[in-house]
View 1 (cartoon, rainbow, N blue to C red):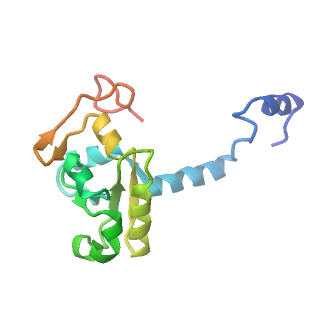
View 2: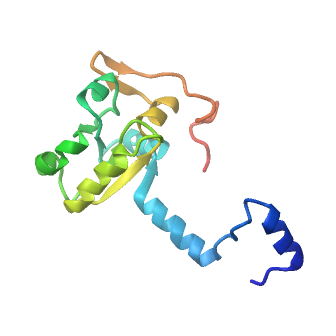
View 3: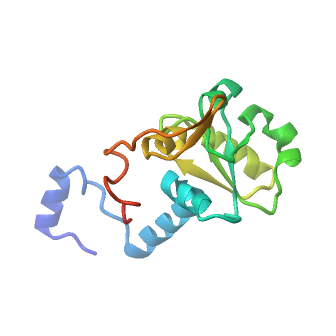
Length: 165
């Protein structure tokens, strides 16, 4: 696509268009690829709530202290540093693994996913981590038992099962 003078002038001033959007085929490949590597907390919660085998396991890669503060019900606890020596005892390479850590400001889930991928596991990272699991109002377990907090209206739709996306 050739830029018209008006488009060129707009993109020089507009920080969003300073770098032109990718061609549709390139964009589709990029976003398809991103979805191959990521799942969000609401999709993970919906798959787990559906009952039966969701087709994946959830792995919490945080410390024991963090795990005790709260974790996704049914998750496997395996701190990233222990993945090389313990993954084979806890995980089946035929079952995809969804990793999570604290939240979007932490790359622990990505480090855990990398360690697992290097061992031959199929992995996805849960975007938002434990923080968004809790903020979206999903139940979690602590050393004292099961808890749930009200959903944060900035992260979860009010009065709806899901955001519709």
